[in-house]
Length: 506
Image (cartoon, rainbow, N blue to C red):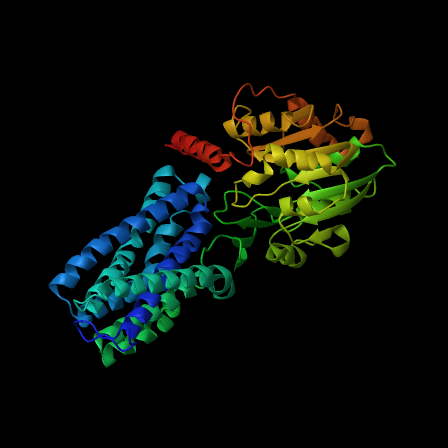
């Protein structure tokens, strides 16, 4: 088919391919931008993704149906151009319209009244439906414009769908791997808006409408320079993995939170103890004899609270040789800039923790797992029977594995599932309440364990040991699911805790 073949409205097939390629890219850019815009406030859990993807698909279905009807009634390129241009303007204003709703989430997912959470979530998601529905109009309308009433119409339709899908591929990879990490989520919307306005103006053959392409360049001046203002904020960063904020706590400490700020991922205090679950980790090297070199692996370092505290407050009592694995290099850089993370505190490896274990042959006396991929969600593959077996293979004789688990009580289904799973690999599993609101310290070994005696600890750690000892117990989770790489509904179990918590607030 010649590239200059024209349909009923005189639109070349080549231009229609370019048009659907661009609108396909814009749909995915809007979807990824929406997820990253919402992530600092709601996180990126299955609840949020299901709500977003479900309503995006509904909007596309509405757009497809409306596009077919509109194309049959007004099969003119100008009509499609105006719809596309309108969607571009709407996309440009989306951050300005969405952020007032998002800022109602002042306390994060668990600290905001449940009614505000639900209203903000669905109100924000619904904002994305109109422009996506308008973009859904593009493909059926373009096929109608390309139809020539001959035997090539099917081939043309297939070609347009192919180019639309290729555009969606570009719209998936470009924001995720380049635009969002480099320029930010707002720039993603504004670039998509500029693309749609340009395509709409070209389709409508309107020079004056083409001047609207400068509108997205003006919108940053109407926007707060911060995506998520909060008291004491020092700075915010959008990394390839998450949204990070560094801020001062009312007590003066420096803290790091990612995504919806439901928890603190790192904290720095000049005092020896934080009052949070990190303090419990400082007792673990004292499980070993005094002259033992405690080779330690930390999975999930964030900005380096644990390495800093171990080096500053423990190494004068026990020799700790620490390797720290952290997937997000931006958090490591923040640790060195704001959290006093020194190169001597740990050998830092930028890699996924499970991948590191799969490729390493090193053995350790102590392994600490404190990895959370989405603020309060443990990556499922760090909770499974296969993972615990991998940890066991990397522990030296008498070695100890410690895992931080967020749980509202000892009866939380998530905690019991992890206990049950660990017990299928390790004969000796213990749990204690760690400092902090919802933290549990799970400790596993091939040998029986007892907490270090108070006399073997420095004075500053004795209150921490006393708190752990008061809740130290062998778990009895009873029958239930054993987490495996094939089936590990960790997010669902965590969501159950969140919904239960919101229900209690309501």
